[in-house]
Length: 243
Image 1 (cartoon, rainbow, N blue to C red):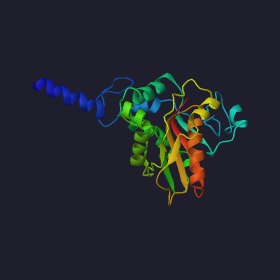
Image 2 (spheres, rainbow, N blue to C red):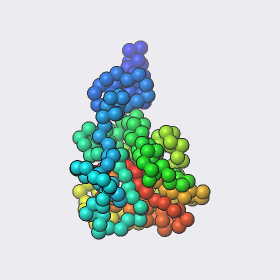
Image 3 (tube, rainbow, N blue to C red):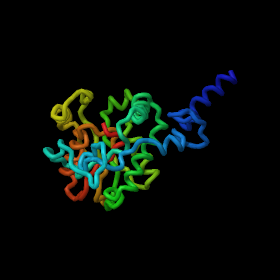
Image 4 (tube, rainbow, N blue to C red):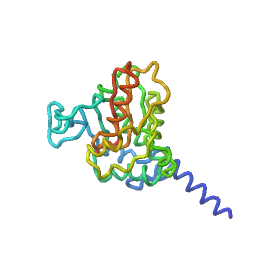
């Protein structure tokens, strides 16, 4: 019986404070998900990316250009930036967090987002900012057990002191968007969100999500915020991964 109790508390602690690095298995001595070496070598998007949607390019650039898609599109947000490149290791981090219910990964995923918010001048100089998580429909949140964007926002607030404002609600259930085109995604998301609460005192809104693919979800959220809160000066997007 004592052994069973020890095993239970040991496994529970590993979920909250994992004892081994997610990537390499190295022993950890603190409240981290990956070791310092793996954190430092994680492939980030640092230069050579679209100045609107954040799609990363190969090669060297003296300035960030527009990608072909953004040349023909108009967004309700000013620009988006993803923290991490779409590599196998980075995808596994997000997949394990989102679908494997490894909640402790929220801390390190938020840390990558916090780097963008604190070190990129376009974000760090935004006046009176708040982070806003993309909401889940209540049924999907119930079946998954949590909203991944909300957990990341909580950690971002803890790490940066930028307040979290949960002013969006998903009022309509939508089918998965994995295989849909951008046009199909926008149709799927039409009128899926509504607002709750207010943004009094905030001039800049940073929409937070786990992955940016076509920008459809961020666009619907930004369009609604711009419509309902016309005094908001800036609406931008930060995600963990670029899809």
